[in-house]
Structure formats: structure tokens, C-alpha cells
Image (cartoon, rainbow, N blue to C red; front, top):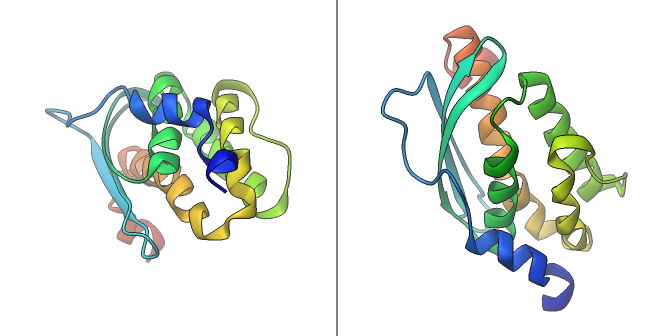
Length: 150
């Protein structure tokens, strides 16, 4: 199990997550927690139009969650809200349905393909992308995630 899940590529990404910390003046923030393992990711975001202008992360997760957050942090500046949603949906489809890996800006998420066979790890892998899409929607509307879903 360890070799499939924790490849050198995954461990390298997990060890080097850019954009760690907090933003001084975020337009929005979102926090996601895995009920299964306790991993958590919190995102501060600033949008300019529908594109990400700045982002900061706080990550307390296993190597898989850290690797996913690292890919996000490396590629997020300039990404549109639509690109973020598509990356999140593609990542989930890769994990749950065996669909092709995400393409384009977030294609490095392919290193997480080994997690497909371990459903208990899926939620941790998804946290960063769930948090960033919530924060981007919130920043775009000025409403909290609860207001957006309720």
C-alpha cells in the first residue's frame, strides 16, 4: 500500500507546499475537515474578476492531502473559478470512477492516482480543492458557503 500511495513524487510535493500561511486581507476563507481522518485545509483567497489573484493555505493533513494542496498552491494564481471547479470534479472522478486524470493547469494531480484504490483516502485528497472552490464562490458573491448552499 505505501509504495502505491506514497510515491517519491507525492512525498516531494507534500514536503514543499508553497503559499503556506494567511493573507492579510482575504476576500474569503474556507475550511474543510475530513471526518474520517481529521485532516484539514483552510484557504484564504483574493479574486480579481473570476481569476485567483492571491491565495494562502493552512494544511494539517497526511502526505496525500499535502500533495494535493501543493499542486493547488503551485498552479492556482490566474486560475478561473471554472477551472477550479473542473479540477475538483476531475480529481473526484479520477478517484471515484477511474476517469482520466485532470488535464491542463492541474495535471500534476495525476501523481495521486494511486489513491484511487483506497476510498478512505479520497476525502483527504479532495480537501484543498473543496476549500478553494468554496472560497472562490464566496469571494465572487460576497456570501458565506452556508448562504450559498442554504
